[in-house]
Image 1 (cartoon, rainbow, N blue to C red):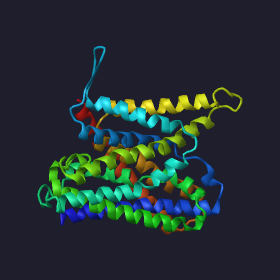
Image 2 (cartoon, rainbow, N blue to C red):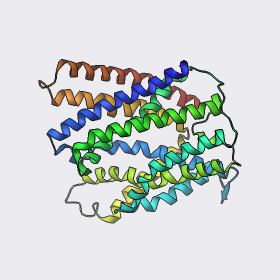
Image 3 (cartoon, helix red, strand yellow):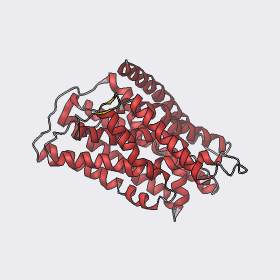
Image 4 (cartoon, rainbow, N blue to C red):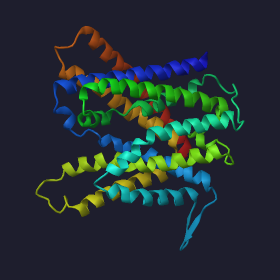
Length: 347
């Protein structure tokens, strides 16, 4: 019963996050020029978890690695963080990301493969599914809400997706299918992971999977490679937005060399954050609570009411206000809980 309440909570977050992009699509249809504005600078906050996911996977496979350079000692976390950064850095320098776009499209299939590996380990590899552990953990509920927000909060990329579609009129259908798939996928992975590992579940279920199983190795390599193919696509809109701030008269700053420097600095900043705050679940919860709630629930509804002032019904106003209240309450609770946990982990 309590586990079902978590499922309902996940489903409700899906509904809330789906409402605002539907309103966005209506406004895009009325004002075709709106999606042309780049609104994805916020995506830089998602690049840190992507890099950290790859780092965790490599550390899982080579846990005892260390490096000594002229008196400087680096543990496995630092070694593979730097290695992963050096691998993805050349992909960030590319201006033509068509190849990476095709590879990134395989992210859907890689996510399905990860879920199948988890299910395979529990059923075929005999890890087993056990109904043990806390059925309802109210202490971690705010963090869970933040992670839900992180999973559903990709609204900053919707304008670019809408403007790049051949038939923008099908955008609401795409949203419906995407959110439905994500909800079912999250529920499946959550149920499998918790029934397999209980309260011992780590920030990524691949860290719990026994290392000697083939399914575990496939899952880890998939978790390592997939974020690497998506990293450049995630950070490129940030670079393009920063380059737009450069005056057109400054030709040197608009050169390819300057662009490479900007991209390198952003990647290195991600590396610094990944090494300084190596707590994936907590950082994801903080991003989901603070940033995702703002851009996915609060801002879209407030902007919609402001733009459509005088043309919205009382029912639409009530729904928007309700979503904003839920976003503010969830964001405040989740942010406070995530910051408190982050301080505790760092001390």
